[in-house]
Length: 237
Ligand code: CA
Image 1 (cartoon, rainbow, N blue to C red):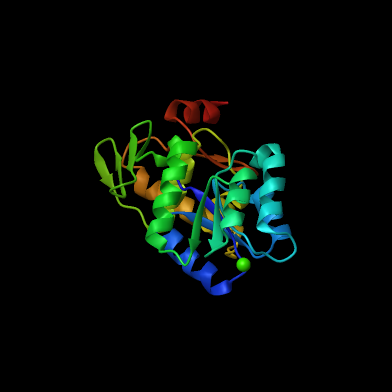
Image 2: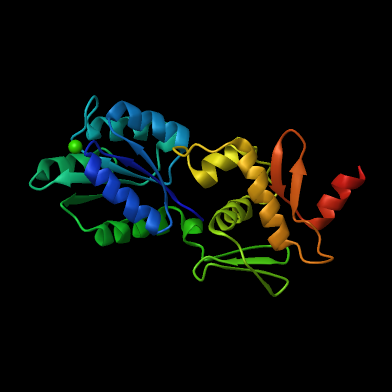
């Protein structure tokens, strides 16, 4: 799975550093630079974990934490507070208000990533999965390899992420827009038809001679990963 992390931090260089390190580790990243935006992003992006700075413009980190915990959809999302050295009182208050962990600035990205992984393992064990499979497809996330019916499938990085996302939600129909947000990210501007191009490449790589097409095109709606039988039935109808 691709865990989504929301970074709430008003120091630009730190955000850049965090984004770089998190993306390199395979996380999807979104950002907010003040407390109000943090609440908005948390509601819209539904992150799997939030990194929350304590000293923020508009709303303090503690207030953001308190409000997140009051909303049903963010009541249980793991939160790691980023605090400045010596703000001992903040740590205690933060944990009181529902933060799960804290890390003191300056910290090493390696240390932070270890904390993130530990929290995610506890909160969302399915995000720690190392293999995804569907029908005769196997995606090995650790080795970054895909096999279909025992045959190695070679995919470009975008096709790999696209397939990974579809494998995480088999049978569900996604619009081009939803796929763009999930696979390319919200901050990247890409045209909707780019999705079609990558779906075409993915199909070409996945479907060997005589093999059924595992990707279903839903007219005017989008795409879904479906079992071949269901695909045939849908066509027959
Ligand atoms: Ca700050």
